[in-house]
Each structure stands twice: as structure tokens, then as C-alpha cells.
Length: 101
Length: 166
Image (cartoon, rainbow over all chains, first blue to last red; front, side, top):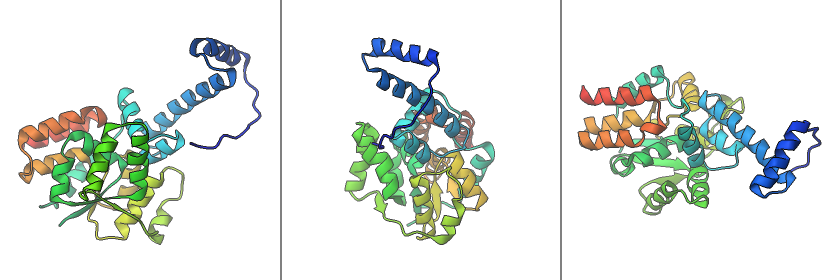
């Protein structure tokens, strides 16, 4: 678990209203609701970066403080276009020809 | 025996394919402590079946977990914050051992390997190669590819299925 730090932040009124709604729906306090909303946005952003190949799986897991298995699962649920490009697949295929048992 | 190193991406996809054991029987496979931690330890904390399965293979000595020594050449490759400990350590292990190839399907990592001319194999191609080497049957290879279809790109799955027919 990553350590939590305090950070001064001005929050738009509509997000406070959303947090108030979440406190009732999810039975959590307002600070927890705000953290959860922040984490949801962070998760979307990290997965976008991962899906576009701008960060790696390991980095995505580190940023979300979770396991790589979780990132792979979430990416598959969202049908993110992860994985090798066509050129990389062709290069990989060539490399397999050196592989013998 | 041909030595290969897997990062978390390659390890997870081959575990889900159901043919990791066959690969471990044919090749000398290693992961780093960092990959073990981010996939197995953290995965078991979250009760992922795959994490327990991999851990059993480690305990049985079939999958080796290696400590890495830093390599200066590798350090110069990681200039930005694109990568985590798993990929960094995997590359250090590759350069500090007699490893022939890295198994991964992580696009960011593949870009770096491409740029530095480091050989890699993606999981779908490795499954096809197992069939070509008669380690698994065609039906087994199709089942393995189907098991990871939702985790790999559509074009790569299609290419692997085509290559099974050649």
C-alpha cells in the first residue's frame, strides 16, 4: 500500500455534489468518496497510456498500486488494443525460427 | 538447453494459455524477483488463481526466479518513466546471463527491445512454434490460442491461427 500524503486542492462544486451522492450510495465518508472518484479517473488514464503503448504493464501496475494480473484483467474487460504491432509480430515470428528443443 | 526470460506480460499470457508447463519442460525459463513480486506475490494477495499456479511452478523448481545485477548498458536504455521494475529487471537479467530471447507482448517494452535490437518472441508465436516443434498438437495449440484470445490483439491471434495452417 502506498503512503498517503495531504495535498491542498480546490474542488469544483459539481464534484462535491457527486461525492455527496456517492457517500449515500456506497455508504462511505466524503473523503473516501472523493479518493475513490480520483482513483477511477486515474485508472482510466493509466489504462489509456498502457493501451497505447506509452507505459508498460509493470509501470501501470505500479501506478495503480495493484498486481500486473489485475491490469491484464481490466485491460481485457475494456478490450484495450494491447500487444505487439504487426511489424513486431512479424519480427517475433522470425525469431521463433531460431528456437529449437 | 535454450534459455528464455519472461516478463510479467509473457508470464501471465502463457499461464492463461495453459501451455506454460510444456514450455518449462522444453526450455530453461527464468523470471526476475521483481516480476515474481509484481505478478505472483501481489497476485496471491488478491487471490488470483494464476498467481498460485505460477508459485507452484516456482516451488517445484520448474520456473527459476533470479536476482539481477545491474548492467550499465541497460541503465542507459531507461531514460524515461515508461517502464516499471519488472521490465527493467528483465532487461538486466537478459544482459547479465546467456539468455537468448525475451518473451513479452507488452507494446511499450517491445518498442524498447526493437530500438535496441534485442530478440523477443510474443506468446502467440511461441505457441505456434511449440506446435511446429511437435511439443503440442494442433488441437492443443488452438486451445491455447483461444484461451488467450481476449488478452492479445486480434491481428496477432489471427496471424497465429494462419501460421498453424502453413
